[in-house]
Length: 200
Image (cartoon, rainbow, N blue to C red; front, side, top):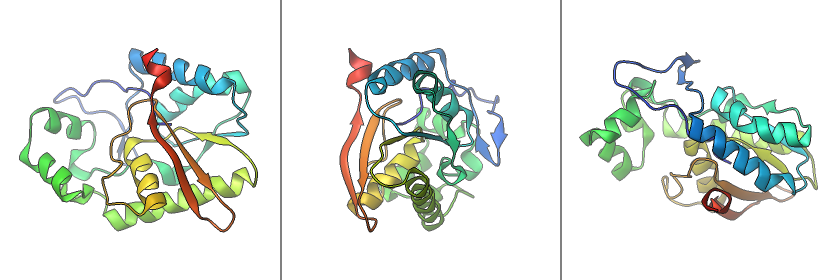
């Protein structure tokens, strides 16, 4: 699932960074979304819970961790794409201000159009490693939950379907996407961006 809505980006007040990545907390609406997704998944068999080093994923996972008694496992490889000069909330500000370079990112389907952003191939490789790590820790015949980031979810779905780069670029906050990893590594994307638990 994608993390809940995070704090709003404010010009000239960049978010704190963790290893170069913006690390805003959840906004109040994000905390409500986290409770809603935990209620949705509470009745399902969840054998493991995974998060990234960025606190918005841990905060989103907290209600589900409480409900299931699971201790979240941190997977550093699945932190969000590094946005270079547009970290700290700058991407959201530029998008809101209709920066032409933001539209180039969307048109060219490359995060690394942004100055000093993570190269696409490098991002894809670390996301692949992160997913493999979850599969290895989870073991066979299990169902696990991972609270991740929009760019990472998009990349996982792209790899599973061999689609174009940004075909799955926007998962809503606290939406659920379901991936099946079969023996041998073949992947099936079962669903994307399920928000039924958020819409009543």
